[in-house]
Image (tube, rainbow, N blue to C red; front, side, top):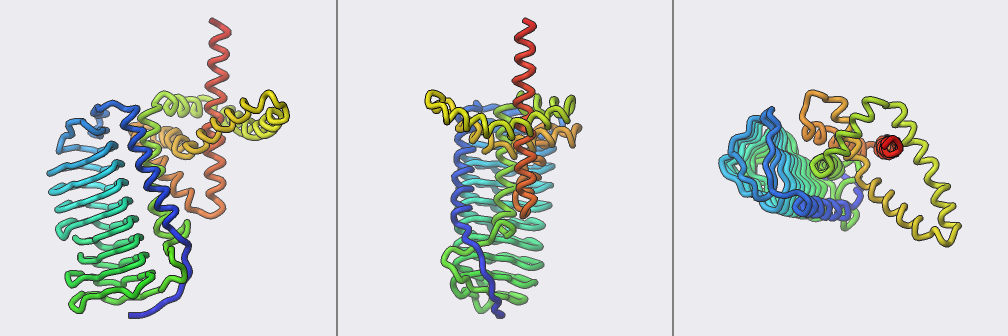
Length: 370
């Protein structure tokens, strides 16, 4: 066992915010979206809590709700879902799995590509397999088999088979007697790893934390999990709850791209002095705070909304939910890149506010002619 040194930034606040975001997203979905099942004709399925979900899906499956308890699923594409709890067994997914929930349990599941999970607790049994596994959770039990694994949490238990390297950031790392790791375990831990005598580990490099929070920075493991997954899920929910806004924004960008972007940029520049003037006028202070609250709400969802719109432009042949997932994840990745993340945020704000300005302008013109 080799020791390495390193400093890391605390991740618990980020993890807590992600958990809250997942709960709020699921609650928003349940409040505003009645139970329904939608198939786009290309084999992709969007479903929610209470729907009768088919065990066989030819394309991708998108789901949001409270509890997802499924057996013998056969999905030809990706599984992307957000909710309170997932319990999936005896299932086969030909693509990737992206899950965000409070608790996740997978048993006897075969995933052809990657598995990205974010929750409070994650349990993968010994018969679960994937090409690569990425997990951010408080408590993690990694069984099954994969080629490589990347995990961040408080307690991580390794008892599966990994053909390559394993990267772990945790307060406590346990490598059980059933673990078979051919590569190197790179561990950033607070406590000395608990390694069973019969565990098979190629090598292990340990970096002990110099703080009591631990974790990785924005370019580290948790950031790479948090931002793309949350962006993807939020984009899906926005596309579901506000389909006319997303499709209308994509159409506006396609028809008058430069005018829309110019409108958004002018709005961002002009809104600051406008708010300042409203604050100066005592009688307009309530209006200023109302506008500021509305702007804050729009800014919160600007990145996933812009990702959904731009996804429809870049991938015109895909269904709107697939476009939203790709676009939201892309802006999530952009949030992990130093310096460039500000450019991504600016583009998102310009696109969303530009579409809102153009929409308002077109409605004014229509009302004048009627």
